[in-house]
Amino acid sequence: MRPWLDSLGLARCPPFQRDPLFLGALAAGLLFWLALGFAVPLAGRLAPPMALLSVLLWQPVLEELLFRGAIQGELLTTPWGTRRLGPVSAANALTSVAFCALHFMHHAPLWALSVLAPSLLFGLLRERHDSVWPALALHIYYNSGYFLLFGVT
Image (tube, rainbow, N blue to C red; front, side, top):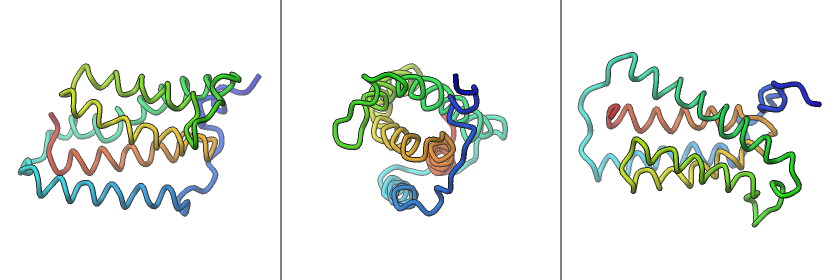
């Protein structure tokens, strides 16, 4: 049996900062925020520090440990979970659908659906590096860009 840190994707952290997929995801996030900033009025104020801490750190950490660590990690141990359609495993697809469904509880439907693509990317990075660290770093980065531009809702 694997140690619990390893099963959550926390035991190893191979270098991912130079991965072209990770770097492309960083650039795509910046382009998305710029486009969104031109299309939607900016918040003009920062949220209270505890709210920022929650959406910029605690929520990404908890979500990545639960979804990419525990759920996707466990599904990847099954023969079914490792089946692929292109680069996306069944484990990643199912985990991303669950992640998207969770966002319907607190977000407008269109915004909740919009987290599906980033979730698939987080899952792809989790599998590519056998670690949740790249997904966690990107999740924090994406949340930071959005909430620093538009505030915490």
